[in-house]
Image 1 (cartoon, rainbow, N blue to C red):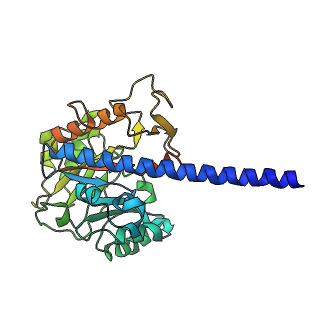
Image 2: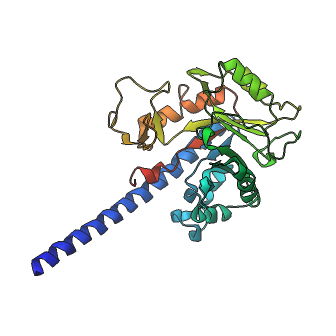
Image 3: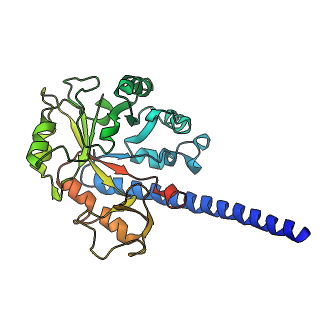
Length: 315
């Protein structure tokens, strides 16, 4: 009986040790993600001092030790202009994420928060918008058939003809990174031009063809004549196997920094984003993803999957 107790104790201690090890590695990776975002921002602003940086999810990075009670990480927060989050109050049905809500409410008031909600029932859109905007945040509500950001909603929240010069001027935004609703690049451009969204988040590419500087410039005027901002989506925490940088012989663990399958997204792999080879894909040279975004004339970048520091170590 004593031997059995000892075995159980060893097993429990082993589980606790594994948990602590995961937490330590994840926390260390979080610091590396902070540095990655800061370095991307510095690189972009070496070309355009007003370049906008918005990380999506991983709001804990804005705080020392990933703890809102430990104070703001001033270097990280000063490097970004806003924070994007998904499914905050609605993830299909109403299910408020109080943990993230408290973090977002603890951010400096001058940082813009963009919240993308998804509802099963379109009747819940107005409530989703109310919940988000009551905090002074921007809301992009979408129904479940637009889960992957393929479609343009029929209405614009707080539609206006103001000139949007900074992220803080925006009262609404369009999140459109898919193109399945458009038969051609030109059709997509024409449809976006005919909208009055203050801010557009879109992909750098239509299929495999990058939007040109002239094309992006043409989107910076709303249909009603007001100016607006155009932001490029970029995935910095996971590799996507349809992108220009992907090599035919790449697969999980080859290269070694292709670390872990991305559950629910079979065409993506979580990466060890601190590795030099991946960082050179993202920024720092003329062939990098960020340089292509800058060369196409975007006003900023929307950095997805910054929460990779967590998902590399936890399911």
